[in-house]
Length: 198
Length: 253
Image (cartoon, rainbow over all chains, first blue to last red; front, side):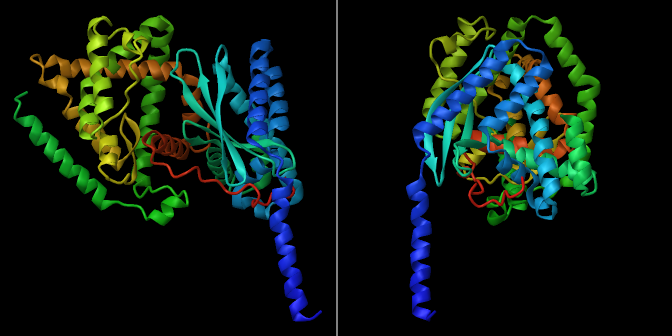
């Protein structure tokens, strides 16, 4: 292949690569806020169901799997340590992490009983959408919760949330890092600890 | 307290603020990358351990008892009372920030709630649609361009930054209620604030417990949560910094 053809080919390829995401762009303001609305409805349904705590945690885990980009969230939470993890470890971590996070935040959702979350607006940021909502809880001043939604995985899923400016993923990455430090960097021990907590 | 002393204290606090801001500043590149500026980490961790001990042995049980015994509407009333007492100070801060609207709101809240609101025990100002006011001298310093400085954990008061620590001290010594005839007003403000904090500690007990006692590194968690939330309140956070979800390697997860 001569040099010139190669360069033209490369240029065409790059153009196609740049153009493709535009064409495949399925996520819209509408679908982003629809996702969060339906997430909120499902969460409220679990809270109102009056089930026992453990049944509620399992429901939250299912909701988490259905609405969130679990592989992105797990990869982010493990951070640079993910680079030295084997694929079996990655898989086990991802699963243990889902159980851990559902229980941890499921406990929080109890404070949501009698409260509601309202979608206020959607804003496009780079390749994703920020869906801002206001949480109205009993006996508390309303506060801001923002969900970040992308279709990276081929489906519209949320991949992070902010509560009054506090980045949940960053908070969890710090926590996972601290557990890993206390286990002297042993990823298997980290997974076992997450399983114990979930 | 003689009137003359106040301005002197105020000025010395300002000098302290400038000093605190001058002696510890973070490299802007490091901050943009999300790094925490914590040069006093060793001291901070010692204070954190102390604070945690005080919480576990005294503050947590007292607060839990308080919200259990005292009916919820009264807990809320005491919290309104403390908030109302802080309004004159907040008005001064709003004026220092050149924010006349907020200063007016603080003034209206104080006048309405102190009279119609049974000396501040109720909050009719909110029913009259007077917006909430929540400012302090730390925010004033921020508006004046003083940088956040280093992260510090204060004994008994908890997470702060060198800028906000100065803010807390200045707010404490310059509370206009101290100018009132009776000096007891100063003390009432402190007691009311302690009672308000007990109400918060009791009401949000699950959330606070999970940070202080259930996380692997409660110091790092408190630090991160405080800094993010404070920057959010001050509008000091950069645009939400996010790794592009399309760039992270998620293979295998």
